[in-house]
Length: 395
Image (cartoon, rainbow, N blue to C red; front, side, top):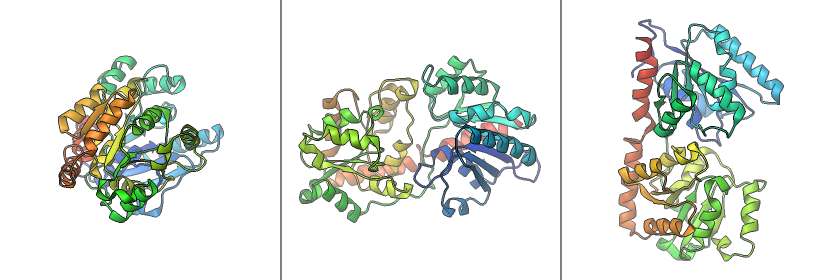
């Protein structure tokens, strides 16, 4: 899809994008559609409700993107954000209003008051299924029914959502992923040596294996089972958790769990860092973890952003053996699956990926980086989906 001209006019298509804030320490996935459209020549006004702000480098790379944040300070500030959304819709007169995320669905319900002509797009990357968030579920159901186009990030989620909400059609599917043009740091031997040293593996040399558990220690990421599995692995394996600031509850939970265990010496806890730094830490590791519980549609049918983050860094993955993830792993040969409730199964999967020669590791790394930049890249599917949403819908 080239450019962004509305219905034969010479002016760019105008898109009012309502989403979560851009923030240097957050992954860009919730904002990716806005960034992609701005790169394609659309005129994008981005409104966010929150307290984080991006650094200038975000905005300078996207001259077609005008970003505005309304501070989040209690429910009253929510009314201020709604007022800003409605006022911007009237002033900007967008061709499309793009609402990203279930937490913004309550604001989307009021959009028609400000614009009767704009086409409404609702995009969710966090659909969790019935009964888990009753307020947002009720708002999302009504808003999704009213929207002209709905986008989900996983095809089983999309099918379930269409049936559960009785939508007119199954949502478009656009997996959460990094685009081919997103900058990803190369593997840095010095950073790797630093992580290996912090895990007590400096003496292991090339035998050291670093396992990236992207994100903090958390029950809904099967961290207790992962730590138990780690105790079954050889002593040349180190485990790296990220976003584990000193005040994080997961850090305290993990430290309590490890008080009487020696494996704590091989676990590295990294503080929250800017996104490029996070990717650089992944690139210094050897294996990425994608474990989730069987606790709802969203967890059972995952399309995690960390998948292509790991792959772009050259890491094979260990994922839950649920149908969607298992099919993806097997279809593309990107790692192993394991029963997320069985530590021995997790340990076996990690060990099978770790026991390879350096030549084998480099070959796998190169193949995965190429795959994540082509077949599994965001832009590969976005070109098709946004062609349907922004071009064919106006034909």
